[in-house]
Length: 491
View 1: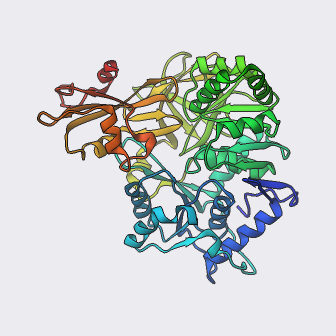
View 2: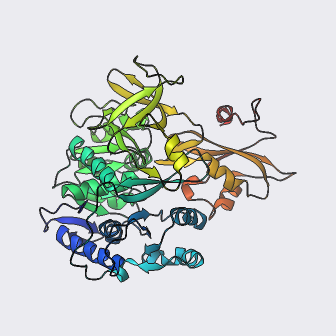
């Protein structure tokens, strides 16, 4: 992948970072200078892992693309994570260098010093590029994004330059990206939703991205009312917040913002199932019929409602271009009848290369060349509908996929906790809310407020339980395994 930037119109605006704009030509020059600084006289980074802790900004784009152009593997870190979470990412991936900004340096400097990982500010690295930057074969690793699976620790998903190009191209075609599109980017930039669906698609198409390190509903809606954007992508939680925000405004102001959304060519919801009441509420307010889709860190996007055609509430649509889908039942047989459930399995050029340093997990995630998603779906009248996960240990909350086991392991460190089970419970705002069922030691007491206070700094905010039940014992089956489905009834 010589460049993931559109090079046809270098004078067009690629990024808005606050009130400052950057053209494609200027961005390309900055990226090449970053690549030159990272190479530091060498010819190629040869898949060295370079992590970066950078908020949504021009520096983020320069770091990501600079690592790619220098031949390294880029590892975007979650700016909201805790030190133990960053440490897992850095050590498991064997990171050789970390890039950051003045604003985020203080939060990770101590960890880098302890791990002996060189740390530099993005603007300090840039230098004149060499005469020739490395040629990058499509099969070379480009990025590691960490995702929570059924184990207690996140796994590093390695995507190649070819995978990323395929993920982008399938969405460019399916969602009719155009060079005159303008989109806000407030989604997390350590997930494919923000990295691929918004940022990379826009820059590949020659569109303009407004970088927003933090979502400000008031500022966002001001821009929407002024018809700044043509495309809008968010998780269901954001649409819930927008609906509540719009309904609380005076009629005249609300109508102006709703008209701005109505004038956009596309609104997309993803990363979690969109409740039908949210789907219909958004249509009632704005006239926009949300386009829902389905994907994973390991595969990019696989299914999507059509850009032109029926967008069916509660369904994730049909296979995207160059994506093959099959449903497999519990007996391992291909599901051939409609309305019969099965696990979604995917075969596509978009599918990742490996879990970094975990050959066993990589091998076990594929069957006969098909990636096993762990998600259960049915096929009904031409559209796929997601029913849930084959594992109860994955919680989809606010667009994140969370590992219940990871959260449980952290909560077990609480001095008053004897046993704990974490489940996801239905929630209008979050899709699923993290809920903890706890057995306490001795005569200890606990409230949800005290638990949240203890978790502050121990877990990322979106992993902290929002609900709590204290019980005398956890229900278990004959094998001693906690029967999590029965715990959901407590809430």
